[in-house]
Image 1 (cartoon, rainbow, N blue to C red):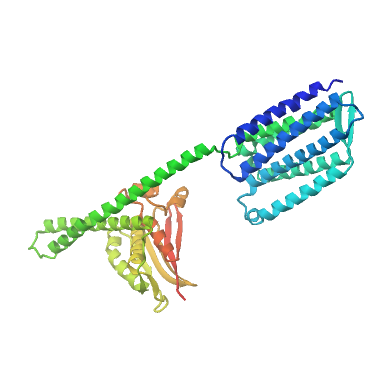
Image 2: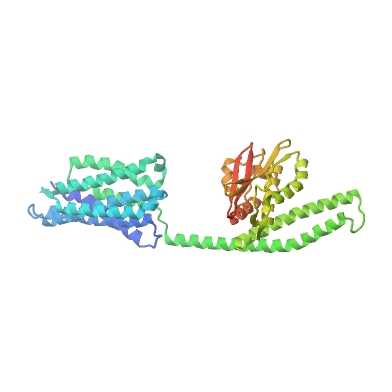
Length: 469
């Protein structure tokens, strides 16, 4: 029996492995866990094909009695098999469990244990008996050393498939495609090895799996990464320019708006003479619109300060129930105009301790949340406002029976400039920065946001502020 046809598989595997090795290492690439593991798999595969080709030449040109060199080559080859299979297991563990807390905490320890196990196994492989069959130019190994190698490679493969199929949904991820191909090829290899034990098909299988992985791992070219970083840098620059423009525009708008509000107030007070009812109505509209614009400009300025890192809280000892009562008195007329009943569950006297907070900004937040609840409630419904001492916190809540927030949009609700789709329809003139500021200001106070909502049934908005001890 001529062994030269058996060389086709290992020689083809050698050239594929060599090509992958050259292509992969010829370019600078991002160093992450996946590419690091893959680089070692390429080295193991290349060495495996070299040893396999050398073994076939030994079988073809050597004598049946000269088995020392094949013994050495086989044991070195076994190391590559063991290393490649173990690396593939590590790759599967990395892409499957990297987000798990247990793996994150024990990753270094597990890696050390893995290395220790492989060193011990390989020492046994070196020491255990190894028999070589070399007859009619066909050579293959058998014995305790081979059985131990196959046993541990089989264990690694079983662990790998177990991890993959723990969550069957993950197999649609392209990263798992090489594993599924290996499962199919593994069945084919077992059948072929039964028919022809001397056929070196495993090195070709390893090279083929490496080839598939080259296209499925997260393996970005460094040039592309640098281009992406440059794009991100430009986007950050544009975002900074936008913030600077908003800040400048807000400052420039605030002065004339303050003058408009001031003169409107003077006109309504009669400081510049009597006005007809029609004139008074027009001036009230001017004053109301100017005050809304002033509030918008103030919010934009706060956003700019937050983005610039210059947002500072002016904390003073504050009676929170008193601020809330002032806001409720001012918002009562608005609730009546919307035919909404405003219900306040007041705390008992002395229940709420004084808090060291930014009085003005917390007052604006409470007014904002109550205003939203009134505006987005249907006529005839009620808005419930409460303030309570809960544990180590003071808890403020506004519960409405309005339009609610769509479930898919709730995760984005407190982000800058975001507005829910149904809110845009009902109130097109909103800016989408009110709730962003609510979250930022409460977080600056060390507090927590309260939010629950069911579309079409209503929402609960509020916050918890810690009580200083």
